[in-house]
Image 1: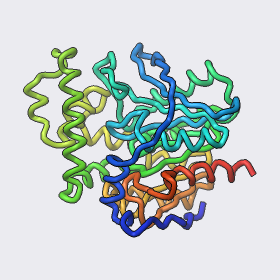
Image 2 (image 1 turned 60 degrees about the vertical axis):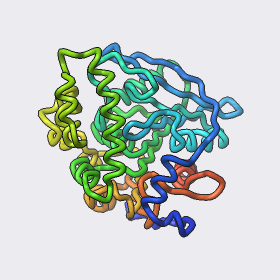
Image 3 (image 1 turned 45 degrees about the horizontal axis):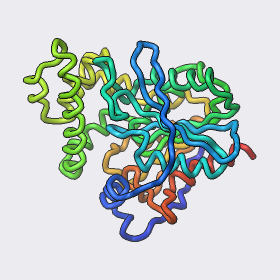
Image 4 (image 1 turned 90 degrees about the vertical axis):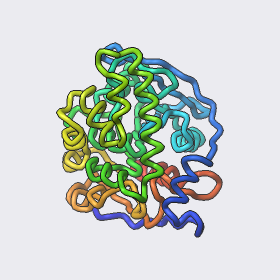
Length: 320
């Protein structure tokens, strides 16, 4: 599919990737009423789903996946949910394991390639609800997960009609390296602080699997992925996790109409995270690379972000 030209042109201040990223993460607010549902995963663990609905009964649903250390109530989730609700589409914001305010039951938690959890969510919804059309939208880590899920095999349900991946770190090793550079130190340290705090809570329940001394030796996100992410989820080490969980290798096999929106000034993404070759060779992939937007910072008018309105436009265009 030819690379798409982007029409996104933010106000001057928000053309700075750092400013748009920070503003979107710390300042933006979205009011949305949600109903929480707890579901059981195949291994007996749980995750929480935050539902919101259109005014009229709908047979369409968008499933939203958050990024690293996010949750279903973050503005980049509720902003999309609210816009879709206002346009006749129900929404469910997925909270990954341990991300809904309560530590999950298992030693494992979530990671960029945990598509088995996404599959469980989709199967649960198909069993319990009656939606004829389902759309997927992921942010950052959630975007990588969706792309990997769609390209893993031929088991994607017919009800899944389209997907949108925003600020997608398609090549996890490259993105991890970028997060460890000086320009991203503030973001790196913030992520590490939240991850370490969550790990300390988990350690209290799983002392045989993880010691306090081991946690104290975690000084970088690389350390975290080597010490916890890899070990808790069956990978040899952090590099093995990055290699097997990166969605880049799965893009050629995607057969669901999919839009990837990755800003060129996203400091979290390495050059491999812009899959130009893969998009050109797959008619189902649509790649849009706006000049601005930072990492999930596509600020626009009336508190509706460009990636949100663009997601709605993309889905609407497929119905014509």
